[in-house]
Amino acid sequence: MWVNEYFNVLAGKVISKDSDELEVLMFMALIHTHYFLIEPHIVFENYEFDGNMHELSAVTNHHAAKIVSNIWKDSNDKRKSDSYWFWLYKEKTPYEIVEEIPEQELKILEKLQIKLKNDKDIYDVVEED
Image 1 (spheres, one colour):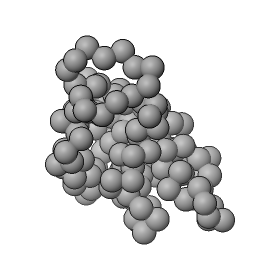
Image 2 (cartoon, rainbow, N blue to C red):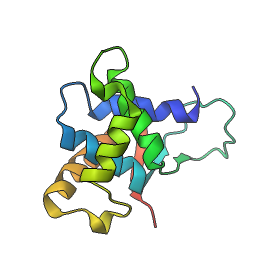
Image 3 (tube, rainbow, N blue to C red):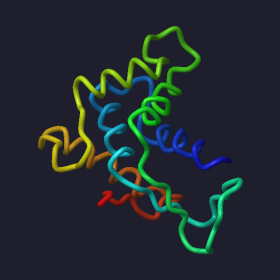
Image 4 (spheres, one colour):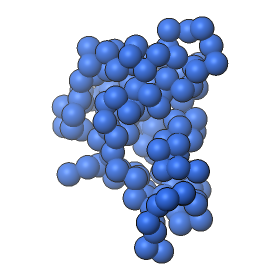
């Protein structure tokens, strides 16, 4: 698996077609403001590995939109468009750092973060500096 493909796996662990819009947007904020330490038993193609954890850097807003749109890729739903998610994020949740996120939305992001931290393949989810 390619490193970029693994973000689709992460999305599938915490969001689905049944997730509400805000939860999806907070997942986008999470992968945009945090990096991920992935357990070494996960194998990535063309990835330089030093024997410790794999570190997956935070993604851009565009990349986050592509990742979440994949949840709906086999439907006729407007949510299958990465442009839909990109502009929705910019309009409703234009956060670049965690400190910008209001408390109610931050609680959703933290729940998603905890779910991912509890996954056997993920060592940690760490806020970017």
